[in-house]
Amino acid sequence: MNSSGTDNRQNAWVRPCTAVWIVLMLLTVAVLAAGQAGLQGGAIVSVILVTTWLKTQMVADFFMGLRRTGGLWRIGITLYLLLVTGLIGLAYRMSAG
Amino acid sequence: MKATTPASPPRRSPPGDLAIWVFICAELLAFGVFFVAYAFARVGHVELFNESQLLLDRFSGALNTLVLITSSYFVVRAVAAIRKGEATLCTRWLLAAIGMGSLFLVIKVTEYGHKLEQGLDLGYNLFFMFYWTMTVFHFMHVILGMVILAAVALKAHRGGYSAQEHTGVETGASYWHMVDLVWIILFPLIYVIR
Image 1 (spheres, each protein chain N blue to C red):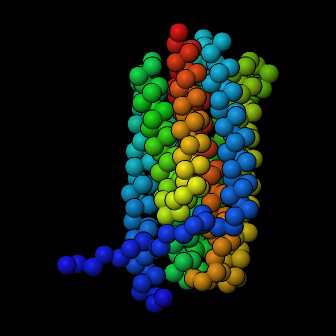
Image 2 (cartoon, rainbow over the protein chains, first blue to last red):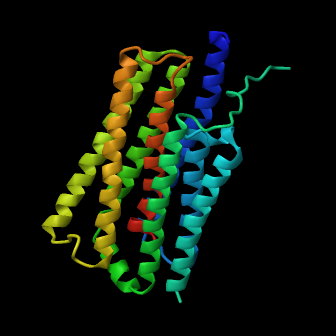
Image 3 (cartoon, rainbow over the protein chains, first blue to last red):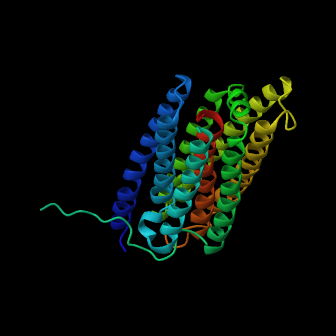
């Protein structure tokens, strides 16, 4: 493989990762803002948990490189993230009565 | 038509040594049990958890999230550098990531100090039992991750990795991303949602 081809491939990987980094930062600030504003309740909890799942999925897919791996590894991590955030959501729904 | 450059070709196994992924899965399961236990423990003590949560410094939690996310991005840049054979650049990005990890620890230790001054220790109540257990458990993982990144950086500095062979860099990177991923769940769970 020539060096130019490798450079292009790595740049094609880093560029979306840079976009993901910026999105992750913005979503974190948004979650902080929701907390500072005292927003609470089922709808807010749902939005924050979906945001959390989205953030972790982006870390797994882009930073950890599972998007290119695919298969059982990606499915396993995705199911784990959905299960954990889903069970947290269920518990909060139960506590809301 | 303009030719597009594909990203690296699909691979069957995740980046890095397979053993680290077995370890990562075990760690994720352990943290997952903590998260779910916290959420269900809260069901019977909603007021206690909500009042206790207000005693936390949400801003420092968010700042630490930004710090860890940024360190994870620096590790991505380190992996990209070594895949291009740029060992010096790889080392620099890894040192930057370790620097962000150090900042995370400083912020966390400062927060711990304030909590202890207020008497909000492990035995204060159920919420703080979870707070201390989960965050200290994660804190230890940050330290371990920094040790791994330091070992990888040292080897990269000595020319131990190349564009062809850099499994060690990908292994360390995968572990560090796991540490970041866990905190991304921990932050809203402990500091924000109520």
